[in-house]
Image (cartoon, rainbow, N blue to C red; front, side):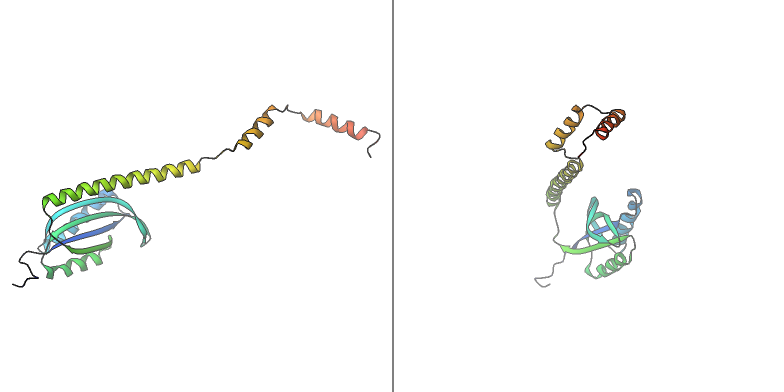
Length: 178
């Protein structure tokens, strides 16, 4: 065997996005179909990860959100086009990407999971900070001058219409208007 080829089955990573027109319960059968597709052509799934519902960077087929899923699997290279074609033709999957990666041990997977959890926590905190800023921005800002004007208006005595009419009559009855 040559130096560049190994006797080990190639290891792949599949990242796919399911459109958000489905509820979380409706996504499960689609996930099962994707996994069944891989196993039906002789693949062995070694790792699964659910990234949850996220906002897309840009709209895809008028959808702005999608459910992200990551799978790692071992599969003979000649079977990869079958999986790729089936995923491409699926109406439920917005996008998918299959890349060849190096085989990871259980320790490497655990380390990556911890790293991903920390990144997810940081993203969640960032999203909360953005929402807080939006909420604070939405609140009306009262300037000190406006507060002062409101206080002055409250301090002024209320004038009734009858008093106003009497005052106007006095002015009009005056002899020297000019």
